[in-house]
Length: 439
Image 1 (cartoon, rainbow, N blue to C red):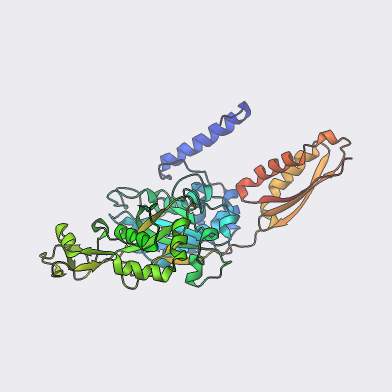
Image 2: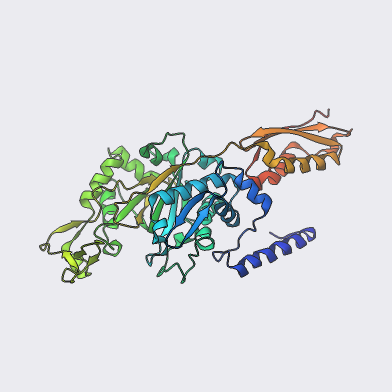
């Protein structure tokens, strides 16, 4: 992880630009990638949407994020150009869900945008759907979600202690994005339950408060697992209002345990609505046995604003909204009985939004400057190149120009790695590499 002497000047220049971003306040605390005009053009080329089109506005702040500003922050977050259609769909999903534009990103609760990616795009851009989905290590997962959080600060001014009034916040404010593990799921993809085709690519946006770890390695029956999940959902600390918004991220092992014993998503929801309950005594102990009239906030039953809360001892209170079709998503590795409960903002009456990812067909002209540079380097050794391609895949043919020796050309695997490395920042890759016959 050290540089050669010829790289030092370039690294020092990059370091000075990164420091300038810190000085301007254009970061989330981590280093950002400087945005150049050429990088911005490459991102905008991946969409048919106008640069000045608004993707999310906050009328109460009189501020709006446009496609151009979304691209700038995606670049700064470390995204590749082929991630940008996902970023735009994520903005659309956050707007459709509604909480972000209504001021809730400024709430003391400390909301974070959680993103789930579905469909073929996961493989195309290497989204992690398996091991350690809530952890680091995957560029797409980290930078797509970070693109939204950077814009929250850089575009809307939501920085801690100013317009962002989070009391403690949540680690998801850095990033929380993962893919649905459709390959190891016993059920159709979540986006299919929202009316999309299996081969559509889509993103679901969830305004979340926290992710609660669920240890259920011991469960051997569906009922054991579901009662464990119900107990995790029905905790007094999660109750801000009358009911809670929830969601499940099931490991493949847990999903198959449930499916093998006859539980589909609807039956799981019905079981949890019935059994995710708290006794009135438990609520009274923590001062949450009453409900206010307007916001349906939990407070003591003897509070002047309480309009409900005179339940008899022994009564059990259901904590899930009866109409909440909360998401049940399979993700993570198939190696242990561990899942998670996602605590969404609100009562559960507002569902997460799922939006199709619309990517513009990509033209080879995007990467022709890189291919021309590669051609010129080959010509110095007596060779040259011809190329074609579309939608992110290049066919490159190496031709003999003046070379008369086979030793002048590096082997095909080495040349492929060199070309892939040159293309890597753009999201394009080498499909076919044709070498000349030097026999």
